[in-house]
Length: 78
Image (cartoon, rainbow, N blue to C red; front, side):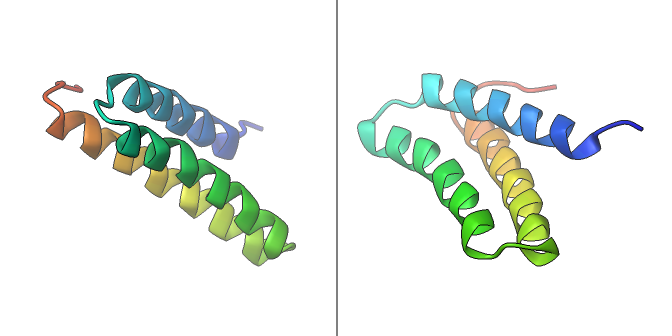
């Protein structure tokens, strides 16, 4: 069985690190680094299947947000 959830989280983390490196201001870096912490805490606040689902959706939205940020920062992601 292929762990698709882990692959998605890994890709989101890679894009998050890339966006953190590209970020120009401290405020941008705080937001980029703070969102994964909030997403992780959601799983602790809502244990069970619903919390796991929100956790995975949060990571996917974080990854998409980092891709959008990188695109608007002038990097071409293909």
